[in-house]
Image (cartoon, rainbow, N blue to C red):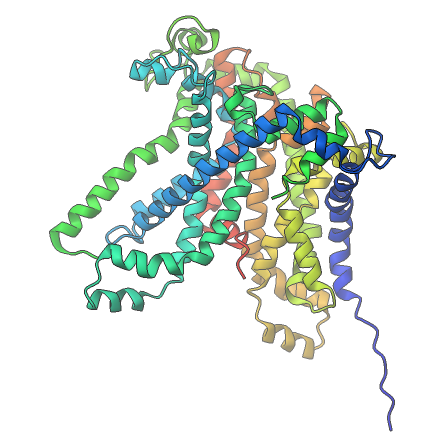
Length: 554
């Protein structure tokens, strides 16, 4: 009787996965574990103190205020976003609009805020919502938007403006999965449009609702960028969020309380003339919202073509506090002087631009070199522990930066990378989100094709290079597009790890609005051009794929 031979596990999948897994362990997993450990130790991290840090955190007034504001913010903005984005998705699929050029313009437009760097818009938000800013001047009101509870609603509006296009793509994916036969049968039975919506659309959208809800919650953490850049580290108390608290405790080196606080934070029918009239009405209703999205670009472009004296007279009062700000659609005396001065006589701007490129593109290269093989292993190679690694990557992908900020800082410092561009590049290169998106792209590779290649003698590495990369290219480009937009817009990591001003990125450079107004306008416009260009070139084909791939669908 022939003895059964024990086969050693094939190490090939782990060779694909090892570089990514090592980096993720060092820069993400280890900091998270260290966060948990420090939450039950003293300041030096040496002596166990049990739940003392948690008790101190729960009794802290600033913590309770931040939790109250964060819960209130989530409780208001997430239901609003879900409802409005679903309404937008339904409107763009309505008869007479679906698959039209106007619908495509709207879809692209409502995704555009994802690409706009927050730092470029900080000046506009200040000009709009200052007590003597453009909003009060236009409507004849006297509201102190950023100094009263109205700041909360400004932040809500900002969140909705930035994320409604993102969520509408998720809803559209869910709507596409509903069979049209169900609607046709319901129409034959005489069901009204509202009855079809409640009996067919909503029940079939429940899986999409769960996904959209989770991603909407995660995006609430990113609104800190807008709140910080517009209102600073200590904003009006109604928008003092947990992220503000974490950053302020971090600067105060209150590590045990910060670690303890971070743990709980890781979380239609119609026809005839009537149908034509309804379609025209929907187009008209969408038009103001399209203009609202494009207004920031127009504002910065016109500001760049306006001289310093004219800007000081029109929007200067919003920043100086004296007089009333005003704005005209076109400058009275157009000039290229601000752009010329920025490009020819502002060397520090080129330094920050180069720093941003130096911090962004190596991250993308690292994600491609390290993340693509890992994604291939998790998608198309069978090995023991694959499910556990997938789950680990998914959990780590959902962690906000503030949860691991302290141990990540200590890790970077221990490696001697503090105050160098590598402190930003390496954690970004080992991000788990691009791996997840690329994995979804590789899922499209037919298994029979790989089996045939293996029969012909192709090694796993040859299958990856000759089949996986070409077929999975859309997923790779989707991941890199989304990573570029996030890295170009990064604020928290450069602010935490870079102290030398000569290393600052554009996000940090543009926080200073005390310089010449015209120069600030030009700097903001040129800062967002790469993101907008890449967005416009890739939005329809790759960015939407990335959003859907990141939707954690089964």
